[in-house]
Length: 332
Figure 1 (cartoon, one colour):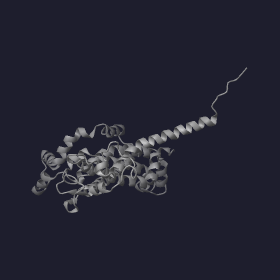
Figure 2 (figure 1 turned 180 degrees about the horizontal axis):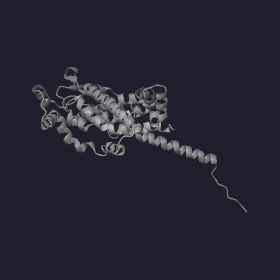
Figure 3 (figure 1 turned 120 degrees about the vertical axis):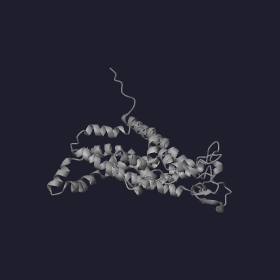
Figure 4 (figure 1 turned 45 degrees about the horizontal axis):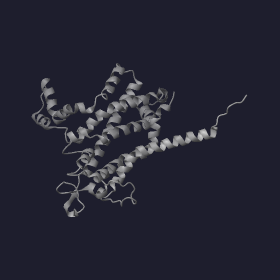
């Protein structure tokens, strides 16, 4: 009786699987990285070569790279209609990009610090104490993320336009009066065109995510760590500061990245609420479309410059981020 043997050897099978794995990984990498490469390549193309058909892909081979687009990001002509190749330096003025980039950094940092700090404290409370109605409160916090922010655009616009007037109406309904000078200040107070307005708004959007994420991380830290510290004479606050927070720091850093990305990229509310002052880069990037033709090179250069701070932060925090996203490996 003859026995049929498999024609493929185990070595060939393993080699094929490894080849298929790395081939799929390389294809996925190229698929997701190509838009970034195309943005970078477009940012260094001369204006005449941006819309060529077929397109030019490789610098120094298909086209001579130039830094004019990056210069144009920081400069504009006095007419505000974009830069032409023949513009003289005397006809140019500094653009709004440095200011909007600074505004984005200030608002994003303030939002991240506030949201992570408040969310971490709330998450620790939910994780360590028996809070009455905890499940309902956590569901309510989560439910705020189910509502698309754009549906509350008009109410937020009205609230931010005259928040002082709303406060005065509430005080008057309670028969509480303020000095005339205070009432006059509240009447004119607004959260539009300010750092405070967008910071409060972005913090509100990021806080539910921080609470839910950090609660899961705190649940993975054994309570015995704090109990042992308090038995050694530490107060609860000292135990939190010296024992819990160092353990949770990678998780806080990983959570803060998501808050940073949300605040850094937000467009609609920044465009509507901060049109005149404290405006951020996304609306400025939209304004670089130009007149008559799209300024693709300038838009690509602006996008690259806007991406750099976030990329630097992510690179510097990469080790903590890896530990933060795998924080669930901690077991009792």
